[in-house]
Picture (cartoon, rainbow, N blue to C red):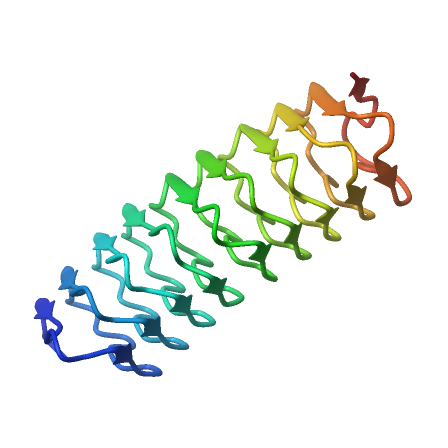
Length: 212
């Protein structure tokens, strides 16, 4: 498979499962307005893909859709996106920043696991992040959890050795066990007094948060 560039036809509404999986030479993809679903593994293992822009029509990104796209540096998630599948961006080692739109209320298992994220913007509208959502994203240094969030799953941020600042903007949130396990550089953890913590926030790092 030596495809370098793909322009999806304007009549296409679904990019099907594994459609371009392991196209190792693919560097760019143009997704037209009208595409509603990018299904499971559609671009998995496209190790040369560098940038993806979503049109406003996209509602769904399937499980592992961009997993192990190791050169993917930029991806623009559109407002109106509703569902992102587990491991959709797992192993995207060159992806340093991303904004999760307000229309996404759920971050699934291992969504950004072992990615290169340094900055992430979580919009108000997010309700829950599942276990291991950011596990191993070792370059992430700070995160703000929006007031809308009600649950942070087990090991959601585990192993983030460079994470120094975590701020919870809301008060009605459950932080599950080991959520920040292994965050050995964590210096400031701001949690509202009514937040519920299961077990220790971080058994190996600094679990003494600042209550505001």
